[in-house]
Image (cartoon, rainbow, N blue to C red; front, top):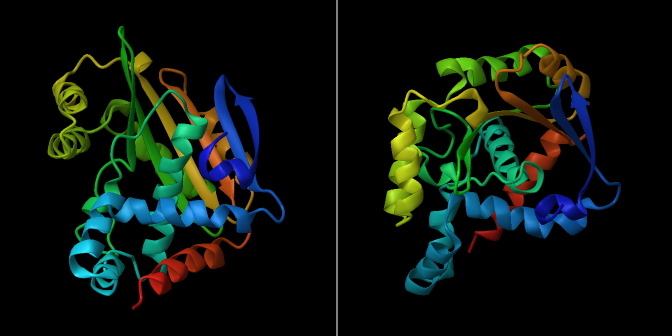
Amino acid sequence: MSGIFNNWCKTQAHSVAGHRLQMLTEDAGKRAAALPALDLAVKAHYDEPTRLAQRIQQWGFAAAARAFNQRLPLINKAQSGHMGEILLTEAVADLVPPFVVPIKRLRWLDGRNMALRGEDLIGVAQNSESVRFLKAESKSRIALSASVVGEARTALNHHDGRPSVHSMLFVADRLYELGQEALARIFDEYAHRRDLSGAQLVHLTFGLSANDSAQLFTNDLQNCGNEIEQQAIGLVIHDHADFIKSVYDRLSNATQP
């Protein structure tokens, strides 16, 4: 692996009913080395680094930092949910190739303690012959449970397992704004197509929790059917709540004048 998880976690991969489960656990003593890359990644999910640098140049560090700090969630529930979505996004490149995630959704939040509607993540993989989409749901809990994993499964099954038109158009619009017109047109086109087959889809359930979620995901994958390829990733952080709080505390403190 590369990226955040390379120097942080051990990974075990399992085949479950023809689907793929990957369990990540922290390598003892390696969190400190991973924190700088993690903090940079979290920061980038709230603001584009080049834009942040431009604000610093234009306004000065203190003013730009105060503006950035207004993007960070304050309440525990929002911090937990955001962190799950961030780590899901960062895991895709490492653990679910060849899919890429074209936008970082949290940059378009309506409010710092809110969640965006629609799928937590839509990834895309394309070559000269085909286009495939990754539809993913993230759950972050101190104690992940079967009912919470079931909520993710229900969300994945919505719209006959396809990404919603709303979410596809949201990604397309953001890509047009970013000048990525070729990729935007793919999302725009498939938002309205009704012939998107199960073979063009992959479902991914992601769980960030303090408890070992391996059996929960195993049970879910054994009962989810085979029309659409299924994957699950569980990331176990034993001090889940303190870990998340520490990330946001560091970023908030770093943006104080």
